[in-house]
Image (tube, rainbow, N blue to C red; front, side, top):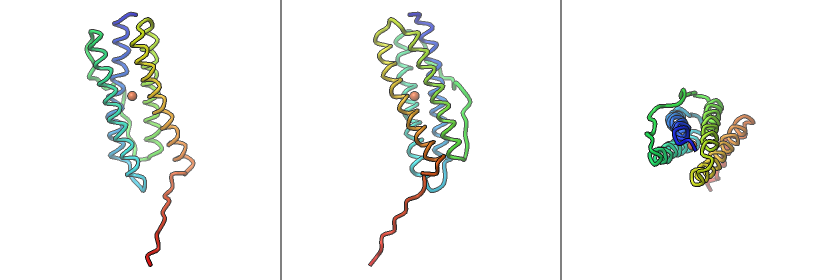
Length: 153
Ligand SMILES: [Fe+2]
């Protein structure tokens, strides 16, 4: 394993997690409409998750002898349209997934790091699938309010 190449690959992922932290936070602020509360909570949760991922791999970079990046790895996109937000988030999650897959390929031979990355990649895949599910719901207009009024006697 080329440690310097692995550190660079992990740092790429860290910078994308920084971008995701900000992008999700911005989407939590901008989302509006009837489903605002639901998606505000979702986006805020994803923002915290992205920050925790940056922290986790920052620690790993330090343990490998490197310095974690403080850069933001890509443009932070924003929108006031929920479908567009979800597309922006999905694109960023897929970019981060590529960075983790590249780090995993470079970490061959380091069983602990490979295992850590495999577990992490599994979680990232779940995030991608959750975003795809929400995007599908928004596209097919299944995110509609279900209002049940209780009769007051
Ligand atoms: Fe992540």
